[in-house]
Image (tube, rainbow, N blue to C red; front, side, top):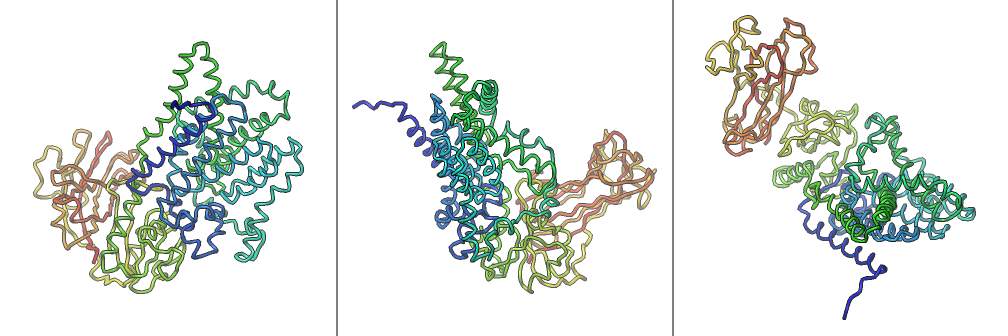
Length: 637
């Protein structure tokens, strides 16, 4: 029995093979990835059956919550399966659209959709962009198939997948009028009517979608603004160059044929391409670019582009068909060209090192924190937190106030006033520190809160310009007489100087005593204060505060004097380090100024490790260094 592969069977085979690859990638995943919003959307979907109002959570996106909730009941990994299904369906519908447009190799639209790098990465999350793209591409297919009323009904649901979907309803109004399908126009209100009625028992307001909008002017102050060209500049990474080049080629082909095609301006294929696909993609990107540029409360994020990437797949297929036609003079060259292009598109996402999914650094920090908390004497203490990661790893219902409280903003609020004695505060750099407006120093200086432990990533990284970390605080008054920092080391460079050639003693300037050391391009490091981590006072975590006095005769030179706290392995290779420079320090030629650096270190990590504090000079002149000092404050149990 011979198995024949026909044009009709190619697309189902490609879909099945693609699905197999996706399942294998999910099976090989070793951790949790995706933005914090992915966790939040998952939690809303998971606990909506217990808290029915969550089905209509504006932020959670009602359409996503309702459809993904059955999957979320079986855990985060199964929640991801929902997005994988949506992505595969988007690829299949892109194939159906390409088939309607008469493309000979329509089945390639499946590969171009699913293996667009950003789209594939977002599929392995519980974010809403993939469902949004499915609703959009399904509506366009129904339009191309001349099922205008059904198309209008489906696109009417898109604002409930993501709020900015409203712009596509406006686009479909134009397309339906273009095709003189006036009777389909009222059906564009179906989504608003349906969800408006559903919302009355919860919000007591039929227009809740508009009146309960969670995006306010306060979002603008939080997220800021940036370059209008942000999304265009990121296309090479998010779409990758094989698809991007094909997409540009396809767009140029459509523009060059615009005059010819518009002779049949009412042809369904022309309206689909020129009235929905091309303006749909560029309208969406331009709208987000404008909002980010003007600082209108929308954060610039690569993932938003995933909403319209199936449209890019169709544009890229347009370019692909043009390339294949040009290579058709030789059947072998045409075949080789097609294989090379398709192979490169499928291969490129796997060069990013993102799949299979691995636990992201911020997730790993929270995982470490919750593991410690579960094994500590504080495991049963009532928690107050900001990050959705916390209840996720604690496997607790974040919407049950009996289990914990999530605080999204601490602005003008004393965090200690939100806790009862004995309760714990879970602080993180992003959601509590930056978005919640609760700086770490303000918590450590609060005498009603005791720092129990600080958690940092294995490899340091920054978020919103600050080193990422998490911490656990206990609501318990401090004994301020014993919690002051105590001196561990002081080098005033007066006596017991090392004979190291990099240390130059000077009597020209000094902050204390009669001596300092001078650093130059030939001698860039000061002598260090160092010791074994295990020899630090007390036990567990210790807060080290390093400080030094510096004089720089050149007032125009900033950012060249760096105070470094290095944590080294037992063989003195760097494990991690922290640094602060004098970039923002204003000083006079003969004026001393100080640099300070405070970090919490674990006496046991790395095993047999060392701590070292020193000054590093990267300028072209010279600086004077005096009074290198380390103080400590024990924290923990």
